[in-house]
Length: 274
Ligand code: MG
Ligand code: MG
Image 1 (cartoon, rainbow, N blue to C red):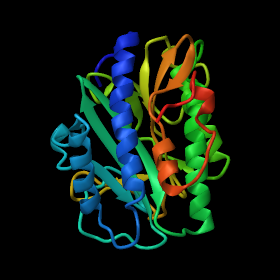
Image 2: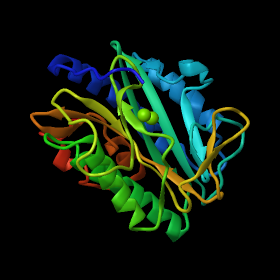
Image 3: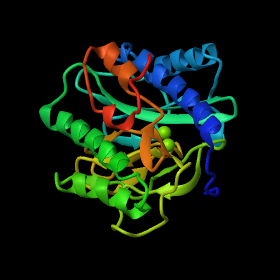
């Protein structure tokens, strides 16, 4: 993984712009996710939307990935390649999206539900998303990478869930994947110290069952080894004045599906102007 590159105020504003292109794209997709639609249809919508907003798809062609979105249903953890299989009521769909604008990348993810889902799967989504905020909370001056990983791991393992080990969060900037690696597991007090100007993509990938994964023959898709569902939520966060500040938002998604949430408030200096 590339080295750690600290960002100044101007660079963080550019990163925020790129992150918000992704946030808006996910918000646009949120109202399209219904039984019968396919991931390839969503992929085309997302590519057009990103280009219409003055950006480039961040994943398309990166490491030779063939599409704009990674779409990973149910037991797929991440890196699913869009296809022609229609979504069904009760599915969960993790969508990871990247955008490149003004020389900087945005990169975040949300796990959507298709219609109504079983209560145990709903709980997996809630706990995984809550663990993301536990991680963000610990991205502060004085803490280390191990503190963040511990916060996520401890929160999820208490529920009996499996924390994926092989895939991790990362620094974000002029490269999609910069240092440092940000594992979703760890020991308190271990690893590099967080410093102002770091911008991270924090992204717990949490399985209902075992933490073990396997890769499909397509060379991309990662699945849970036991076939049980997996969830993935990702935000882009900058360390400013010793505190975490969100650059991305799920608010466009919440507006699209009609829910209200105050979960992001602690990580903003001022309310979002959408
Ligand atoms: Mg991502
Ligand atoms: Mg990422």
